[in-house]
Image 1 (cartoon, rainbow, N blue to C red):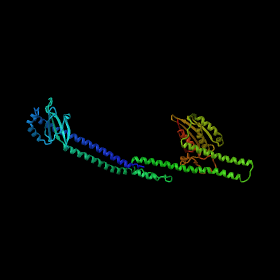
Image 2 (spheres, helix red, strand yellow):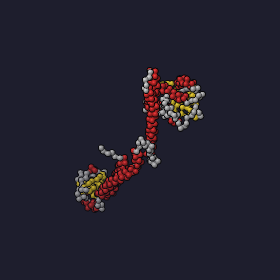
Image 3 (cartoon, rainbow, N blue to C red):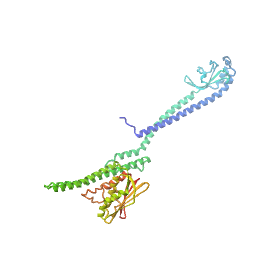
Length: 452
């Protein structure tokens, strides 16, 4: 399998490629600018020589006439060793050539152009001897630019050398810079590699990290915090399940063993089975509640959306709990009214859990009240009861599964397993709302807020 390049190697190659492209582009532009500058200089030089040559050849219309001016023409050309001249007739026939070996030139290249002959480069400039005159002889001025070409060739070699050296230097410096810049990532990788179920308290340092990696480390630390919290909750949940199921199972085993120690009549067996049935029903209810919470945690609770008059729903629940309240000498009241679209069965279960919880912890002559209100954006439900306050350190744990404020844990009782408030919170969250608890000045209040 081909090994993939590391991030540092990719950055180094990217730096080198960018440097090479920039250097090459700058070199090509400089080379083109130099070549254009030399052409302008050659054009100016040839333009300065042209009037003198035209004066020397003025009035010539045949090779014979040109022969009479040959010595004067050659003398004029001797002042410019790099300059050569070709004269051709209107028909293209060569009348005069100051070069030892003739270079083929045609009128197709009128104006300034470049020719090469036997390794020598010339700048050729072809014009009419008599501008504006038809059938005028043609003059071709040839300027030796070999030294210019050598300069441009050296410049090209220098450009390629510069590109290569720049790319190599940038690759090395880029690799060093990338390795130095990615050091925090390697540290994060080492820390992440050491994270396990037994070391979830490990956190990434982010004080001296770059801003981008600091955000990543903070997000990673937050994730570790959530994982640690979930792991702790899962461990506690497993322990709570074992604790809650151990007592009824032990009761069932003990009761069954005692029943089987000796023969009994049908009535005694029936009584024993009824006792076992009560324990089994409590266990079944606990398992159903746990499954309900599992569905809620995985987002599988899909409440129906039906129009509800919350005042009527609360009145029905208060009527149901009225006998219990009268027996405990507790007053039940309701204030306000509101309408909401939600699941009737789920909301009744949530409110029933809260009312049952309030009645259990309200002393005689106390009161339990339900207050409803609504605004443009939400519906509020407050259930409060008088009695002993809940300590502030206990409030954040009230909605945890199997949590009960009573340290005795109600051994042997499966009626209240500590799942009611957790189920209530799941139902409220499934409707998009939230629930909080506050306890002060002898009043405990559960506040529910549901979005309209």
